[in-house]
Image (cartoon, rainbow, N blue to C red; front, side, top):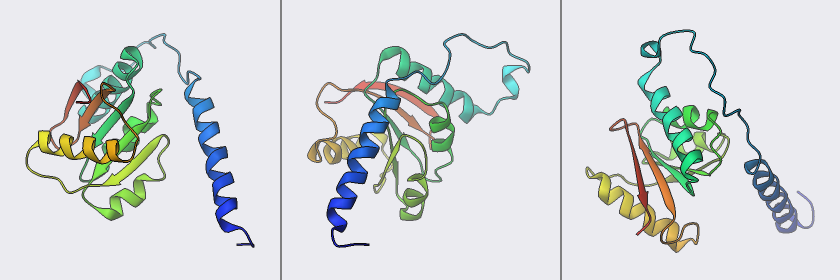
Length: 156
């Protein structure tokens, strides 16, 4: 590892953050819609939700996308859409959180879920505010594979 592992990690972190900031400023897709070859009904519902959430985040210039997932299956679909904002993924399973670390633009967290999505949102907001990652009035798109839904809200 060398004599200065902390400095080495700090340099790697600063380089990766700079590169991600640079790449987020670039558009990774054309805004021109491609012709539909197959009927939209054949696409999976989760793919449609992720596609809509990414387009909505880009169009509304959202600050973040939150994904609540037990299985982690929706996160790669959303990551593949390459939205212009970071994706925060919340899962109750540590193994899923570790796997989500490999997805582009995703910052995963392990968070115990309650039966109420509002409580989950409140817990996420508190966690991220305490870490200085979000602030009040940030625009957030919320996606969940537990309810198969998309919501738009401001951080309280």
